[in-house]
Length: 354
Image 1: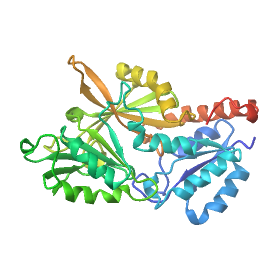
Image 2: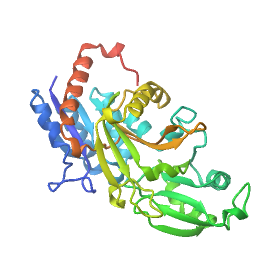
Image 3: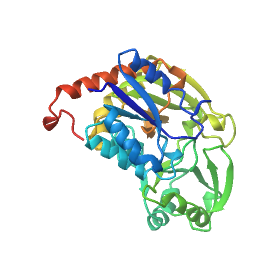
Image 4: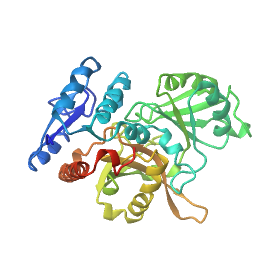
């Protein structure tokens, strides 16, 4: 065993500190070092993919991916490299297939029918399906459309029909919509036809996709993010949108107020998430759980007037923890425990299925 871990990052983006790398990557390096391991940060570029692959294969036992896909023009080459590394004995944290399964917006749709995702959730992969089905979906009430790519609320739209009392079972293409983007809570007006054509950009490319969900009015009370270390909740972030008429975004950029809580302050939600982990894992492909991942929830009300939590999104590609850097100690322990387990098991009869 080489006792070395490589942390992949991408240059640029709003998640970097003054020296160009993420502020929460260096603590992982320090925590591994205190346990007798070494680690380093490598910035991924497609042009350097071959050299990075060879270096990582020769020097490391594992990688930790901390690349926000939004910081890459095309993540295809990056994921190809990760898959090659994993297939040649490098431990993937997370495995690239798990990163894709958990990070894609359709992870929510794949969980519909469970106690955390309602049936009224859909995904669109092409314009014809979007054009045929979204007007029917919109007739049920205010919707939220989420693009698969992007970050900080970009391409997440709250879609409301103006003068909706004029329509019944389906919204016509000339109906006027009020659109609010989560990036900054700004509003626009477009006809349904114009908006559908605008959304073509989100359907382009290998990972083009739109998630269609009902708008939950209790987002005003805040979105609750549960940060997971494998199967254990380690922190909770309460994100309350700005106090403005149209605000529904829970991003800091949009003016949301964040509060950082211990899991013990959200016992019901934490029990729910930890109980759901086996179901989430099974429905998202039965991969090993990502090292660090998050699940974002919004409060809703059931038919008996009781609170219930609805999953809005899962993130696994590039989860930050700058507000609780002490988590690096738990991450280092988990990495070493995993590597110790891997070294004890014959690869031909591996304990984990991927």
